[in-house]
Length: 254
Image 1 (cartoon, rainbow, N blue to C red):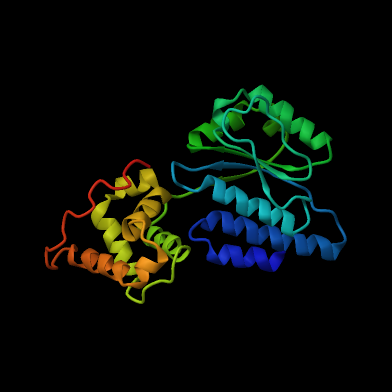
Image 2: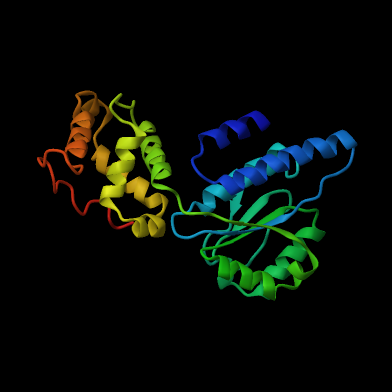
């Protein structure tokens, strides 16, 4: 399970702070095991804007807690939006996103009940660090108990380019002409820094769709993806202008 976790971390783009937390979690588990002492659980407070990957981060954390044997379930229990009642599952990692929209008393009651029921991990997430700080300050539970606090930084344009290529690779074999630098420059030409920060990973999804244009593997084998990348290169500053304006507006809804 540890090996699978490390492979997953290596293949996942970004999330430097979360990865540091996970690596330390693994190191601490080895140290506690060698000393013959039980290792305690800690709940997490997670913040990050739209497209910052809050659910992806939570899934990595859930996989890590399971890999070191602190929870019995390897999957993430996602409560979804607007659950009728807040209930954190014993023996697993549970995500409550948009936590600032719920009553602090209800969250506190669920956390105290989780601790009494045998233990599990709760991840309380929100789009803003201010929202998480507000929840933490108003919580009786977190006055008495510590939590691990993390903020997800916006993806860089290079990271968005890597995620774009991962999206393409999940559907077909990559063309040798496809490089991170080409896609990175295309992303920077198409979306401003402000747009990249506000939309996060959705930029990469939109860029992948733009390159693929819903082509099937058979169609792409005929070189159509290479043609799209050729248009991309020609649309860059200083290159020939043919093909400019193609595909404008596609994928802007996310």
